[in-house]
Image 1 (cartoon, protein in one colour):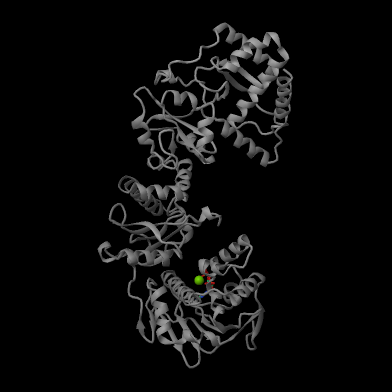
Image 2: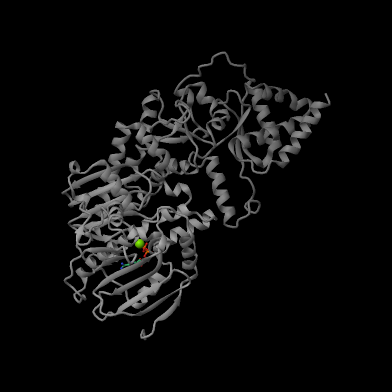
Length: 627
Ligand code: ADP
Ligand code: MG
């Protein structure tokens, strides 16, 4: 490689896209470029500190690890200098010429999702290094890698289509960025202004950030401090700094432990659920330190996957400093940390739920899905997680929820199971046929609104040794739990007539039904489909079918609808009439039987194509209207 004459490189297309937006943006908080560059300087210094542990031959080994900022108001320039790992020629191209890194990538993705140019996104995602082109005419990056055989280089660009790399005179290890401000932004080069910005955004940087030799950040490793010495405001600011977040934390957990490991941890629950906003799956966000030295910003196994929304820092003096990211994957130390921290976090949630139920409920609304995911994927913590579940029920008001323990505390003596029903809404569940029998006996039913809820019930199977049972299941003996409260009931069809009618309907419906029987449970509805398999509700079946179809399966080829169990209500006028009709007008009775089945399918969420049922419905109406 020869860098005698400047080498010209085109920015990667995506970078040009980002630059174009950044340069022309009307985003008002242009000062964030300082935060981005100081944070890069800090990252590079952290990396150097980590490299020092594993490598012997480091260029300029004894420099003080600090970040220096200086401004020349006259010239309109700002210089930010670190003694971090620096960059080689190839690293310059890779890091400052492409978009391989996190911040800008998230920005681009968000742009694609949003479609429009959105100035706010610049602030929300921190476009990283490229943000400097909001305020700069030109930028020079002088750099010298830590590697002994490194080279002094200078990268320069005006933020349009290309950049240049050339050899530089003797640089010290690290990176020095010289920003030449656009005329209208020369204000940033005032000493007061730059000091103010650094105090605002860089308070928690782990190395001294000095302006003209004076360190402006004094807070340091907040997670190692005593709780009493930290203000609420500092906690909030630290969260924003550490998580690169723009919301406030909902609450935090700051603890120290000595056994089985020495741990100092500061964990935050965010206010916003970014996954809920459609930004895709979150990356884990709890950084791992060993005595203030950053080991990994996003360690994969430090917390279970379902806790990926948690932000913060875990510092353990027991970690070997030279632990590599690879060996961390299956390190038993990491597993121990995982166990301790998860337990503590769950305990915090439990305490919140007890002492500040409103705060917990609000958390549940935003992050409940993660806990549900935990129940289905994390056997170790399942029991603890089950205590944290909250559901609406037939006993709660719309919008308020109950814990499973509270549900059981209200259940009558004889109730040995926990009943639930799935549906799109409270109204859908309460007007369906399955709820009637429970309502008539005042037996509480949990309302499940989300597809994952049934998986939760299936995976957990039981809470406090009481099985979860879908209220549309066969074989629930409600009379053993409580009698019906409404005693003046319609008289039922005789047993003989009921049996005759069941046989008739079964014959007419053929393979669509496996069984037709009289229901003990129905009150106001004429019929319902009952679920023979307690573990496989109609909703689940529907979902599995949808999944199979998505994978290219064809419903018809799979044998169409599986037969269902139909139950009829011998007290319902329609059923009683039908019993008389099947002798006098078999054709109409047959049509009505088919319609009964389809209506029950609709109530069970099992009817996908209503066209046949609508045609039949017209036929029935036609016959009625001719009378
Ligand atoms: P991010 O910090 O999210 O990775 P940036 O756009 O801020 O993205 O920076 C891009 C990359 O450039 C960094 O990942 C890093 O590899 C490199 N880089 C930026 N500033 C420095 C620096 N001061 N020292 C060494 N490398 C740097
Ligand atoms: Mg950065």
